[in-house]
Length: 189
Image 1 (cartoon, rainbow, N blue to C red):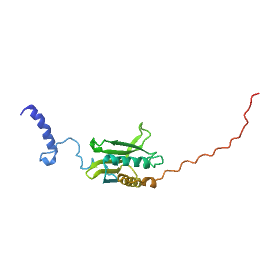
Image 2: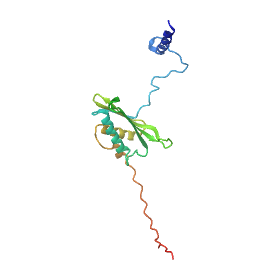
Image 3: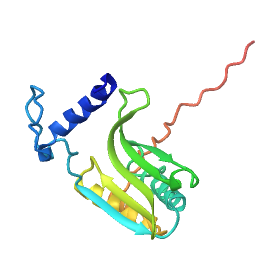
Image 4: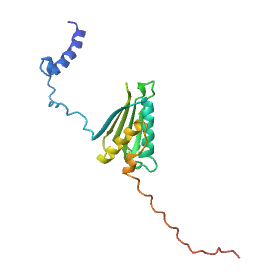
């Protein structure tokens, strides 16, 4: 066998040896074995997946408008605590796939993008667009309201479940102007 053949076959045999179904003994790396499922991402508390009519670009636009108006608008319940970030591809590239992420605001970071708290993915589907919304780090009541909002907006509806559930705090009371003593301007003589 040539040197090149043994170089190519060596890694293949090593890979096959790592598979328990190949009949060969597994290779030992000196580390403890990884339990199946131990590398999986933690379970998501609230997730919704639905297929809606429309292109991913159209659905993404509806969702972005709803999020910016309801959750992050001037009186939105997440305006002060979260930051919006989105990646959207054109329809000609990747079919218009999009991902919207809300991250907790972290003042210690330069761009203030902290932990990912909520994610929405929009992908092409034979029935239109698939929307998957997942609350990654949100309390249950907020997460439930947010996934309901996403489902409504994805279908072209309007409303703001989160805003109704968590209305913004009232603005601070305006201070009353104090009555200052009036003094006569002094004139020079």
